[in-house]
Amino acid sequence: MKRNHLIYLKIIDLLKDGAFNRSSGYHTFVFSSLSLKEVQSRYVVLRNFIEKNHNLIFFTDKRSPKVKSIIKNNQTECLFYDKFKKIQLRIKTKSFILRDNTEIRKYWDKVPIESRKSYSTKLAPSSTIDTKNKCNEKEYLSDKNAFSNFCVVENYIREIDFLSLITDTHERMKIIIKNNQIKIKELIP
Ligand SMILES: Cc1cc2nc3c(=O)[nH]c(=O)nc-3n(C[C@H](O)[C@H](O)[C@H](O)COP(=O)(O)O)c2cc1C
Image 1 (tube, rainbow, N blue to C red):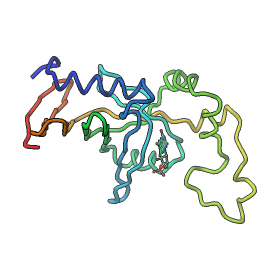
Image 2: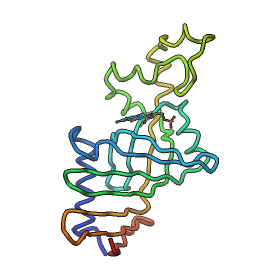
Image 3: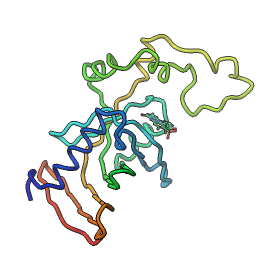
């Protein structure tokens, strides 16, 4: 099967729209990773979708637990659902922390000043607030230090489980992406 398969093209459009349109149902997704045999899931925002290498991008704080879990095990899953379109995309991915500073800087330059606060907390995300550090809790780091906490996560698509509940006969497809080759199989919904 080729890149001109209708379902494949539809998924590409949904993901592009998810990245660039805030009101799209695919603008946020559930990102799951494994940490010491424990599954961890959380919502993140789709910041970019690079079609040519099937790469889903989100931003996070370098100090967050999800970054540690990706470094230990890069097999992850990205789960999307739009309740109006009634299409679920369950996507198996391989995740990497972007290391190219020029590329990271390009993304950072587009982060609004207000949003940069997310990366400038003095205490690492998920730290417990207790009596010892209570006074630092509202302290923020400089923009330069916030940039050093800013982390771009790349998630390369390996497999997509497409499920559409629109028609009476639900439609389900498996799309496998390997070495930039695409295989499509129809599944029982
Ligand atoms: C709608 C929504 C969007 C979110 N987007 C992001 C995001 O893009 N990046 C991020 O790091 N956390 C985001 N969060 C917060 C995460 O879900 C999570 O609570 C936080 O990052 C801590 O995750 P961790 O402890 O597993 O690393 C979002 C939460 C919600 C509810």
